[in-house]
Length: 363
Ligand code: ADP
Image (cartoon, rainbow, N blue to C red):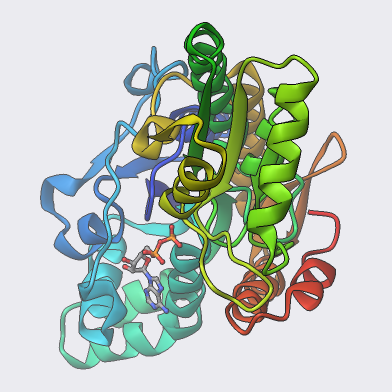
């Protein structure tokens, strides 16, 4: 008789709807009352119509849609205890003590904090006479499970995050389209792709589109990169190639930590090679469009597993994220993954690239 709610938070990614759908349907299948929380934590704090009961039909025909139909937001209120107190009350009033949070490391950190504070929040609500002691006793434990929606594949502990595969498809489609026009006019295209701390999209796109040069955050180029790129592009042209593709991840830099932008690359190519060089910044196109088959299936498996993990949780079980390990959906300790992810970001910021790669491990 304890309710389950699902919400999406932070940056959106393709496949979130498939995850929402799987959570909802598995919950209904197992006999739970299940709710959507709209607009992420903001909806949890605001309550009212933002928290709505879901049914089997309310998640029909969403598996193929990009973004998130229940909305996502960044929420300052939830960062404050007062906001979390309101959120706790909104959940208690509906009997919700199980949460599936679909978001990035920030959203998962918030959920973990909420869970740790839960009993003290309930105590405060009893003191304020907002809830009764019966309610406090009945709903004394909050269970949370995380799913990682991120197009960058920048989360430690899972081989793939929900949305990455689709974003890669968007990038490859764009590069293929640009390559045909680049070929006609013998142009050089510099493509800026997402990935502030993680070069997964850039490196995978570079392999899949036979790009000539790439810049990724984890492996900064030497400070004489200008010579290297010119030599490489020149060689390709001398070998008869009519176009060049260069991929620059957002977080690219040189070994001294100077950022490298698509503009910087274009300037070098213009000045030294006198190529007709153009920049394409893919931006939010990478987040858009229908999810790939891989992301739909990944999200379905993860969503179903999240609901199962919640149903099997005991008061002292550690919160988990559902991750992909090889071809298995597995449960891994949430805070371990979040802490490792944050340690990677810190190492990158401090220009300890080798440490970052080591910390990240396989995924
Ligand atoms: P992402 O989940 O994609 O990493 P953010 O870092 O912006 O995105 O986090 C999304 C939301 O999660 C924030 O707007 C905030 O409401 C909540 N959140 C993030 N970090 C915390 C935190 N340390 N404490 C409480 N809430 C947090």
